[in-house]
Length: 489
Image (cartoon, rainbow, N blue to C red; front, side, top):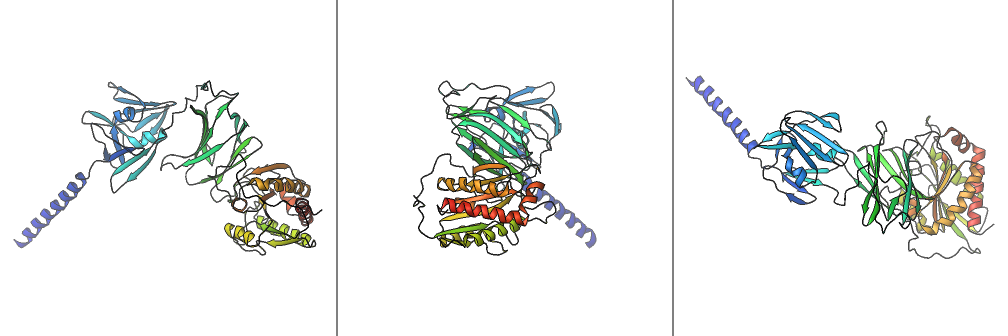
């Protein structure tokens, strides 16, 4: 009897626990939707099935502005936004996206006589961003609120008051080069502004470049897919706005695996991509990738002119060092840090012979020095010049040549002088003087430049750079450049 009673109590307890668990699940409130911070209300509330939020089809048309069609015979919903068309069938996991079959985890459902569709699946395809707040059970949707871009197949006509002729700048071409470099060529005065939008688990991150007062002399809208590229999924451009005039370029970036750097020179805007942890050509991980590069001279503290007749302090900065080897060749035997150190040491030996120059090394030995410590060192030394020496690298082994970077207008003259002597020393191709936001030349207050002497990833460049006699020649030419700029020749 006692045994039967115990079994009965156990069964009752099981059902009570099971029923409590079910009640707790049912008791969870329906999720609340917010679009750009504004609450979305609907006749039928959204609900969660497993991990998917299902919403009434009407929300897509009324709140998001998509074109929606319903075929009652096929039980099929069609959602259209510009060049994207999604076809979904009730209770079917196969979904057509621009004619290609994709799988959706939770298919559309009929609920309270309404068609409910998976919001995140559709939204991510359409370019929306999502954030789920578990505590408040809120779905926050982010959508671009500015006027929508024109369809890729339609060439937008500029506003009559902002024609190609009188726009501040005109984009003439957009090219994808070396499997990792996006090049925007233009005429006029281009003022790019970059922003970065994180995607979700199933969508790409987006790098957005907006260019105010800009239109196109080429086709005003186009989309390029890069299916096998390791850095980006593709890019697109459009006449994003007509009033006020604005051009936009968007790159769809593989999330959590790609970094980028933006530079601007000689009527071209360069967006260089690389894998996270990989050396960015012309960047060395020292540039702020979201930095908006100034296109006009910025107000700066006036520096006294170089007139001669005094002792000048020059800080030579050997990039990388210690546990940070910098770039290297495929064998890992030719390390950037070694070239940088050798050349700065040789420069110091040459310049030390001139009593009018006081040379200080930011990295006098093979150890890692943080970037801001290099800047702080230059300021402590009250340097008149700051010269950072580097070696470049690229995923394309054909990339080659020498280039010099500056950030502030006060450094441009120094960059022009040193590029001339860098070329004389290396004998490599001229990649010109460029502007970029490298931290060590951006945060220093004296004229400061960063030299990319050549590409260790290129066999010919590397053979030149890692020859001891050539390093002596490069150092000697750079020392002459310092003297010319300081008017000490």
